[in-house]
Every structure is written in structure tokens, then in C-alpha cells.
Image (cartoon, rainbow, N blue to C red; front, side, top):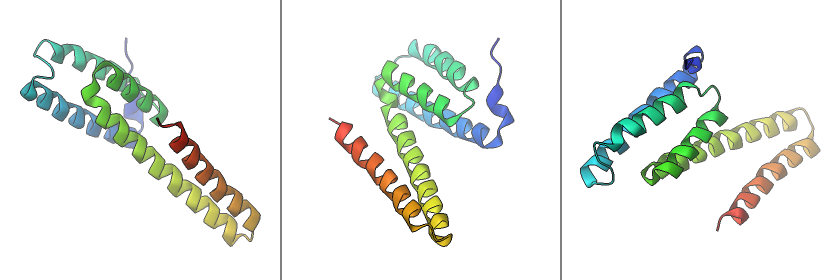
Length: 129
């Protein structure tokens, strides 16, 4: 039995519902342009429901999106968009933490925080083919 754990977190529930809408839009588009057939829809739908009903964390949702995009390439845009959103959130958190460190007079800590964020940006760019 699948437990719908994400309903306990309102933000996660909203994110999953938004994701379901985006997935539905892509399925409709795929049907219209012939990328998938009516036979594919229940298979994709079951995969989506199983994957999103058990996702508790953002990381689990990202893992699901990666698997979805691997199985059906038309969902790659969702994975890329979600990765960009995670990057924005991470950058905002790093900036806020660096600002807090600066306000506390910890200049070295703030510089280390900014350097760490920019180093991860550079390593991601180098890893891309």
C-alpha cells in the first residue's frame, strides 16, 4: 500500500499538485504531436502517481523527475526547470547566510560562504558536456 506522505507538508502538497498539472500539460501535448499514444497514458500516469505519492522531500521529488525524464524524454523540461529552481533556492540561502555572517562581523565566514557557492557553480559548469 502506498502512503500519501506528502500531504502532511502543505508546501510539498502544493508543489506536487503544480507538478501534476505540468505533467498533464506535457502528456496532452505529447498526445497531440504524436510523441505518445493513448496506450502510454495509463503507464505514465501510474508511474507519476506512484512516484509523487511517496515523495516526502525535495530530493525525492528530484529523483522522481530524473527517472521520469529518463523513461520519457518529453519530461526533460520539467527536470531542467526543477533543477534551476533548486539552484535559485540554494543561492538565495547562501546569500542570506553570507549576509548574516557579515552583519555579525564574520567577514572570513561570509567570504568562505560566497566562495563555496561560486565553487559549486563552477564545478557544475565544468561537469556539463
